[in-house]
Amino acid sequence: MKSITAKKVMTSPVVSVGARTSLRQLVKVLDRTRYGGFPVIDKEKRVVGMVSEKDVLSYTRCIIGGPIRNPRKLLDDKDESVQVSGQRGLDVLEFVASATVATLMSKDVVLAEETASVLDVIETMNRRKISRVPVVNADGRLTGIVTKTDLLKMVEKWMKSNRKT
Image 1: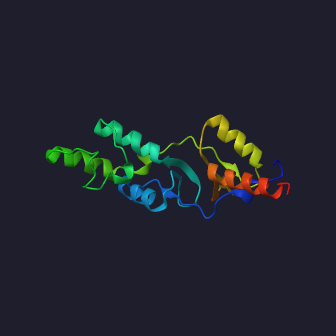
Image 2: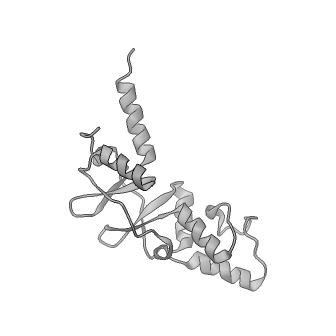
Image 3: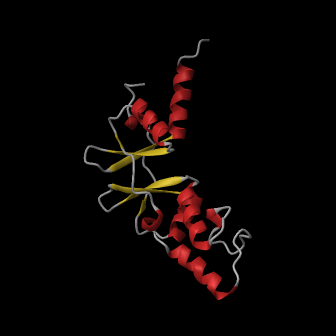
């Protein structure tokens, strides 16, 4: 596995968002893609943060004061997990929805270069307890992402190719 690089197993192109993306837009992207999180990039496609569904849950819980079962339903008027009463409640929800990704993203991002060994990526993911690592080229620009799903697909392929018949 040391000879397998991040570039060989990464998902590309990668879905990413900008730091100025609103929570409302982020929720739509979460819903459309069904991914759990995304790299946050600047105009030069350099990674400046990571944002996840967990970040949305933490932020909304902090602002609203209670749990929201499904952040993908945050802006859906029919979601019964969000109890809103009066204009103040509506104002709070609108405030939450208009927050930007920069407000809730994690800035301490672990990156892997395309040439990094998959074993190093796995060790980093295990040590840091993270589910995804953005992959960058030699110029530091986002080119892909390695997720736990990518790693499982790699292991499955390897096991099938080494299966004794």
